Image (cartoon, rainbow, N blue to C red; front, top):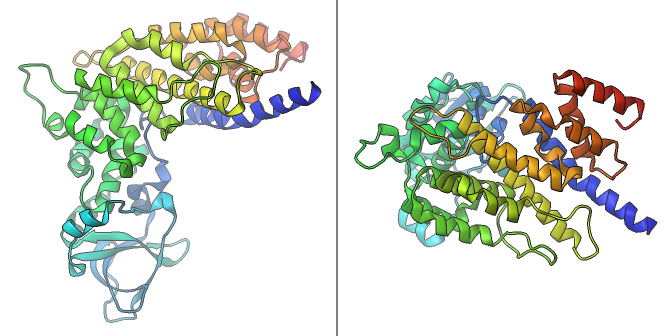
Length: 431
């Protein structure tokens, strides 16, 4: 019995360390930029890397591997072509590399002659060496010069996003892997509220805006979503499918989600969907169907057994909790988008409707209430202080990240009764 409790406690501690890091990131992250579901890490994007490089050039490869002759200055002066060749070290970190995963037949059909491709080299003042970070068609030189002087996405104000989307939307899934990667990163970094305001399909008889004309529509998105080679970008394409607002997409979304709906006792079906994919699918379904889908989301994604029961395997429990976290992320993103909605773009779901769903989750799973505490605090929903305090002093096992989030909620709570509860918990050594 003691061993089982120890294993259970250790499992939950490990399982929710990651959740804790994610929650901590949300508390610290700026709210003015980035879609929380699909945005890549800011420092790894191409635009961010070009922004910090001292020099960037397009260069022609020589016979010896890793040697190049500079051809086009992208950022900074062009090195003397008559001097020694530039020696570029290949940057092979997967997160920073544009990899072409198209089939050999597709590559052969659309292949460009080697003479039409140039290497992209960036020079770092920190490492004092040239990095070979990809290849680009020669005709894209002006495009690269333009993006090399852009601000990283984290520094873009809301007013600057329409022009940025106009630059990158046409290049989603461009035949050049590097161009397609840059386009994905920048579109995925846009705030979700702005995506739905600027890209949502107009109603019947309403003339679409230039951005709406550029946005991929449901048939194109479904083609990309059926392509497993593009799996790393699917979370964005799920979101855009919701923004496209085509009711015919509902069957596709629910069919995909049915692959990961946690079973109540037995293990869950195996599926190659990441939590980000599930968040994107749920956000898209909510975007199209609105509050009508909330009971289904609560039933299938916000109901799970805590702590681990004898009838449920650790893998099944871990999957169930990952799905709950994915659902909370989708609901939080949609509620935040609703808060930012203007008169033209009505919210898919209101903050209050999400708060009600969270309240039900807190009642059913008090030990895991920390999963929703950050959103509740961000929206000024301070009425959960007593519930959290009762859970913290109950003596139940509470995963560390959930406990930390509830305590942080109480510390942020401006109400006098919350401050009194914090002092009571301290005296009782419950925190």
